[in-house]
Amino acid sequence: METPEKLSLFERFNNWVKSSVMLKLFSIFILILLLMIPSTMLESLIHERQITRDIAEEEITSKWGSNQTIGGAVITIPYTIIQEDDNGKKSTVIAYAHFLPEHLNITGKLIPEKRYRGIYVVMLYNAQLHLQGFFKKPNVELLKIPKERFLFSEAFISFGITDMKGIKEAIKLKINGIDTEMNSGIESKDLFASGASCPINLAAETINFDAQINLNGSKEIDFLPFGKTTKVTIESSWGTPSFVGESLPDERQITEKGFKAVWNELHLNRNYPQQGVGNFIGFDANYQESNPHNHTTVDYSDGVATKVTGELQSSFGVKLLLPVDEYQKTMRSTKYNLMFIVITFIAFFFVEILNRKRLHPIQYLLVGFAICLFYVLLLAISEHLSFNIAYLIGCITILTLITFYTQSIFKNSRITLIFNGILSLLYGFFYSLLQLEDYSLLLGSIGLLIILTVVMYLTRNIDWYRAYNNKE
Image 1 (tube, rainbow, N blue to C red):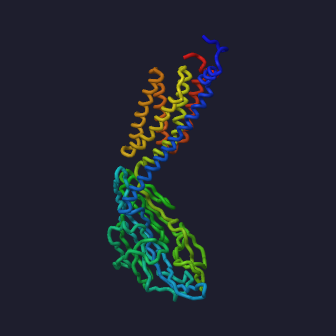
Image 2 (tube, helix red, strand yellow):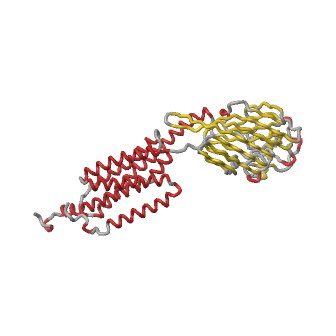
Image 3 (cartoon, rainbow, N blue to C red):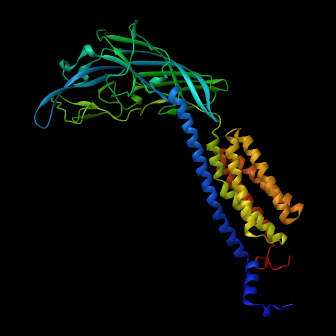
């Protein structure tokens, strides 16, 4: 037998490669970096599936009705503006002054409905809305525009509706108790891109309105608090609502059988007044500049007007959530992929050291690929079954695969069972992190501390300088 002194340089290098702990750790580090490539591909795959789902949702909502935002009622009075171009030529253009109600009360019932496109489900609703309120007779003097410029005979009342295809019945409107027919479209686009309107007589000192709207929409419905006082009451049989927008409801009741929410808003809660010209429902500012219908200079020789930008900044409403978003949970689970691979490789490495059984980097790599495959299974199965069932099936499948592979490597049932137990605990630990979202950082920190403590305890007697020196 050759003595160490008679070994060739190549043989000594080969022995060093086999016995170097640092080199093995470095190779494991490189493998972990390589496995980040499929991990990144996993996130891209999830995004692609989300896009596919969004396209399927769009196909349904484009025919049924999209997210709806309800604004109104609003009284609008056209008025004339004298405009002068660069050549000194004067012309008359039409602008619009808008007046918001003194009180607005909206009650509504949302009837939820699920629609399917392939494997994807879309949350739809039918909204049965009742809008009541009143206006004081519009006081145009507040706008500091000469009264003779206003075209009172062309005044109209309007309601803003985001997606008009969602209207299922003719809008029933009463003004001061008289039935009035609403027409599709709004002459002015200052406040609403789409909606319904009708002429209105401004002779009365108080103008009461009562409207009933039957409307289809999808996922979310919002309201604009146009009243000096606004009250919105919404109820539904859907048990998982999410309240969105600038205001949370003052009262809410949520049970498995449905929810009821009530908002009470004052004009002081928003940043625009009860009257203005142009698109004034953003911020209140005085200006002397362009006409809203073109970009030429307007001559406000008689005073200032009110400028507005930022539509919908004060809106609020409710979103009908599906109980579980499998893509969101799967994406969150992939965030733990790196930690899972690192802990698994550490366990593999210590079994290798303690058992004096050297493993090839390819064997580490195959186990890493199996771990990454878990997330593909989780994504694919969760599109058809619940996320929890998909997680369980994925765990059992990958654990079975790695268990048989570990047994074939170590030929030791005890080590295989221990390794299987470690992986089972890891899957259970990360599942708990997914469920306890608010406490995931705390639970994760405690879990990592326990893992580090166990590793330090098990390796306390290892001589790292001669970890591989003993013969197998």
